[in-house]
Length: 85
Image (cartoon, rainbow, N blue to C red; front, side, top):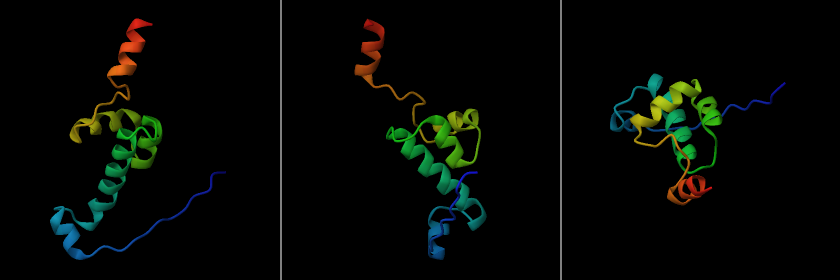
């Protein structure tokens, strides 16, 4: 059995209008944004990011394009090392 935690915080109403979100869509978008950023920073895998976002890995990879984040966690040096061998 996995331990689960509920996390909550308070935001002012103007946050919703600034982000053009209603409260119902804010939470999933917040989860997605956090998952994408943590993935982009190399802190978590695609699978873990998808879990955080509450979607499948395939859906997460599609969402990465919306955030203009590559699905590959390799930089130029790592790619060169892979190619060379």
